[in-house]
Length: 161
Image (cartoon, rainbow, N blue to C red; front, side, top):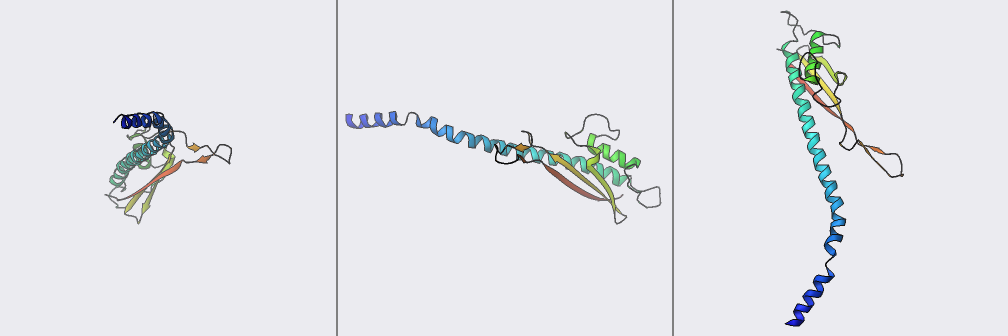
């Protein structure tokens, strides 16, 4: 019986530093996986916020698109009052354009408004997503850094009311 106990003690002593070695190999991979999952969650959150703001803007524009009782959609131009209010609503969450943007670096220039088939309005938004760590992956001297920023694009068409 003492021989078995002696063998178990020797095995435990041999494996004493093994857990630390395994952790140093696995920990970077787990941290990378955690970072990737958090970035995917952040992308989904930003895209959801973007489409909600876009939906509010499209709904506002659809409700105010007709010019008087002519049943003709007012031309959506960059200088039109409805277009300005719609862009402000999408970017700032209000028609006046005051406050901070709902999404960091979202601007009025990222929004395109157009008329489709003279009965529908279309709102396109292109938001440039930048990862939390800065947007480039270093290649450590093996070529230029890799840009991982990309545009989140969303498009919505609504019938003018």
